[in-house]
Amino acid sequence: MEQVKIGIIGGSGLYQMPELTDIKEENIETPFGKPSDAFIIGTLEGERVAFLPRHGRGHKLTPTELPFRANIYAMKLLGVDYILSVSAVGSLQEKYVPTDFVIPDQFFDRTRARVEESTFFGGGIVGHITFAHPVCEELGDILEASCKTVENLKVHRGGTYLCMEGPAFSTKAESNVYRSWGMDVIGMTNLQEAKLAREAEIAYATLALVTDYDCWHEGHDDVSVEMVIEYLNKNVRNAQLVLKEAVKRVTAKQTPNQFAGATKNAIFTQPENWNQETAKKLEAIIGKYRR
Image (cartoon, rainbow, N blue to C red; front, side, top):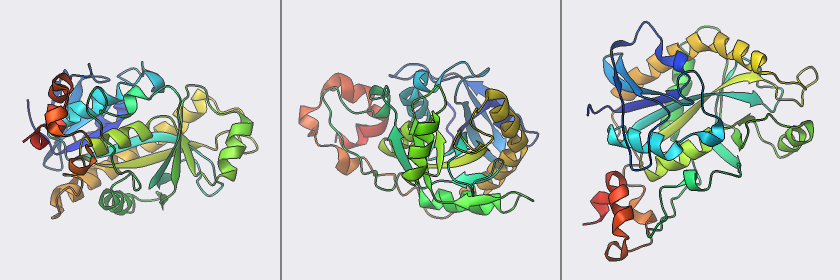
């Protein structure tokens, strides 16, 4: 299996860029099943990168159906140290205008049906990862700097991404409550990715593409798929340009992945008490701590 340093999760349109060359597909099996789709591995800015269509090509998986553990574990098997996640979000504040980009630094969980898909631990090995700061600040810096190289692109740094269950959009009452809580953007996928990436010791950051004002805003009380797709399509090329620049900057950075040892002190179960079947499943993540 080819090893790559940078992984990108997002829509299939992201990897359909002229700058990506020497492309191949990689189907990966994990102890947690198959990822959302085959990985698209190609060369971007001289670096081999792995793209994963989050919902599968053709957008066939709902947020609740996403195999989050398989997706992140497959990244680990590929040798990925850095994940750049790109996703559409709704704006919960007036200042985030459709077509703006947001780089959130916090998450708030409103999912209900993803307990199993939110952690690699359990089954005889208990781990409690530190998650006060859920994204990599250094990757956030890189994404912000990369956004500023794209003409006429407005980027906002910081803010809280509220992760809802879906697949339905919010009710107006829910949207107004989230606003009163001080939430900034709303989506359906990135929290589980961030948690699992931390457990897998992979640096993670989100590039959120604002497509609508959710339903709280006058004139946006009936958010439609057509509206989301329209604004998302307007942002695809800008997102490609940001990723192109970000890959160059990640490749050039001198400091190592700061989360490389994040799981070491999170494991409460002593190695001699590990369930061996679970330990085998988690070998790519915790195998080095067995010794």
